[in-house]
Image 1 (cartoon, rainbow, N blue to C red):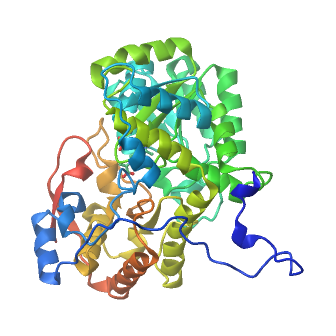
Image 2 (image 1 turned 180 degrees about the vertical axis):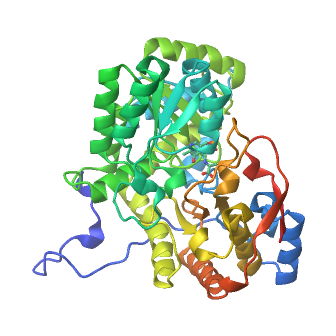
Length: 477
Ligand code: PLI
């Protein structure tokens, strides 16, 4: 870590004690443009929620006061990124912004090759089509909705090999995103290494509550996979946040920079899919990065079919420039500390109020444990969906269900998947909201918690075939 990376607030005063008293962090930016937001009246919020079929995805953004639906594509860009937007080279082929992006991915993530994609799922589609054959098996540290769907559409079966602690909202282990090596080895022994095209490792693990995976675990996964001739593919969507947790929690990494940890982490994998809409601080964009020449060759062929030429992949030149610059900013120590510091601030207040949330607090969001919040509502009456609707009506805060609705149905049996975690996610966009917005949010959740006995469940009245959580509709029981 260079001296510029250290926290100047924590520098000892000359002649004073080595460690100063507690000092708060502050956002390493000031605001120079604002976007007005408004809170509707309660009657208007009730009407808006009813019109949206009790699904927060179906609300109009204008009807939302504080939007914690997702941290995906919702972050604020810097003046440096906006300046880069004006330097877009919109050539069909060979845009200079592509080369900037390629250089940023190589420098900060360390992979040899990359193709841009319109967003993360574009990369997942290409990767799944290239590597998965009918009847293959893909182990991963908990499913993610789009990732698993692309694996299934390509003919694969996903297997969850995350550690058991990940499924327990109260377990305080520091690295609940870790892969359980015994579960992984048992699966490989059962189906045969030749039917496992890659292990899909996400850092951090979104559906487990933004929980990180340790460097030691990543190394063990790499060693095991190498011994069995299996690739490791990283979902790098929030890998910078994961690197920050390694710096804070894993012995031996406290003096290493986040940028340095990220590079070492990625070096343990053979490639990555990436949604640039999270860590990389852009409103749209992603990439697929690979080290193997022949797999990259396939990706460069296929990207033309689904996304666009290999030097734009569905993005404008200006979008690629913004992402290249966003990557650079994302690994700055003061940025990542305040980003996760804000999530921790919201978490601390909810913990103080006794609200059951997934612990430890993860990187991008607070996840409320809806089954402990509303214990009277059985899981097949969608307690998390009900809580997200109630929160909007109470304060205009938009959250997201991450429970049985998100988990979808088993393609074989047609039954609901019943995940152990039935959660409501309060997701924080980067550099968008202030501490006062966090206060309005926790106060509203605490109010609902005080009156939790009044809550009722839901019944699903419309269910789309794919990724149903986006468009399903519900009625209150
Ligand atoms: O939304 P995309 O297509 O850019 O990225 C898909 C995607 C892949 N992996 C992970 C871990 C994600 O979190 C992810 C997208 N997440 C969304 C949209 C979210 O709200 O969490």
